[in-house]
Amino acid sequence: MQTWYGIDIGGTKIELAACDARGAVIHRQRVATPCHDYAAFLDSVAALVDQADETLGNTCKAVGVALPGVRDADSGRQLSANVPALTGRTVGADLQTRLQRPLALGNDLQCFALSEAQGGAADGYPSMFGVILGTGAGGGYCKDGRLVAGNNGMAGEWGHWSLPATLQLRHDLPLLDCGCGLRGCLERYVSGSGLALIHARQGGDALDAQQVVERANGGDAVAQRALAIHRDLLGYCFASLILALDPHVIVLGGGLSKLEPLYRDLPAAIAPYLFAGVRVPPILPPVFGDAGGARGAALLACQQHPAG
Image (cartoon, rainbow, N blue to C red; front, side, top):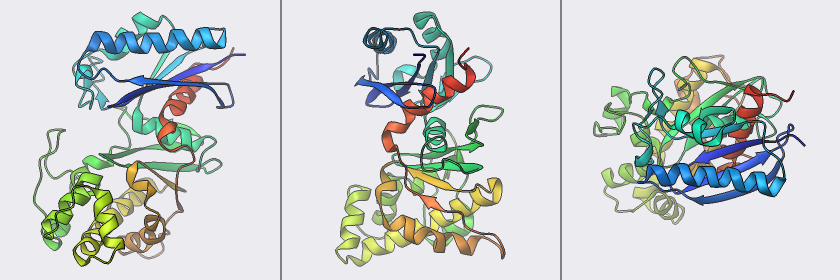
């Protein structure tokens, strides 16, 4: 049986998923990420691939790799990665040398979207946008079950759009620096840490997004106000995505995607930022969740290096 491997590189774990041509996962394994040792990182990925070959009794057709951050198109060097050992490194070329088989390189957020587009929550829709709301904010766009990566390979990086002045003034928000080098990126306000920051601006002291939600559910007025502001910011973000790409469905991922009220409340938060006649698409929870990145990377490898 022909297989494709997908490897999802995260800040805490590296996960490999082996898939058949239908996208069914037939083998999965994960190890801790060596965040500060590049040689150990390469060794860990190679060991996962070797173990999968041994377990399955064959060599895969190709390997897809879901990398954090973005890759410079000219030099091939990884930029803005949440794995310090990868920053500035030619990860793709170095993995090609180690693994000696065809590679397909993608962004971890885009691979999440591709997994949900094929066999996931967005299966069968002509187009979809996969939104990640967790420690950061980003996503990926797919049409007809295929990833649209864009000229720089970073289509879907909506988290680095700028917070508009109208919302900054309305909610008395500070202009924050972003790790990407820009200022006022939406990611700083709508991510999990952004929700905690909004709560602090309202006079609260919650340590993380989960605490804000728990306090709001318990009737705490400050936490409820913070959630309302956060929901308004998300409404603007999603409306902008709809106006830019008009996806047939939006699938949420990341830690905040587990907040069930979002699926109920977001359509009403989005509508005020759209003009008459523009419909809000369905907003759905993911099928594969955190496990989607490795599967999506395998699907990307299968698309770029099909059976034959």
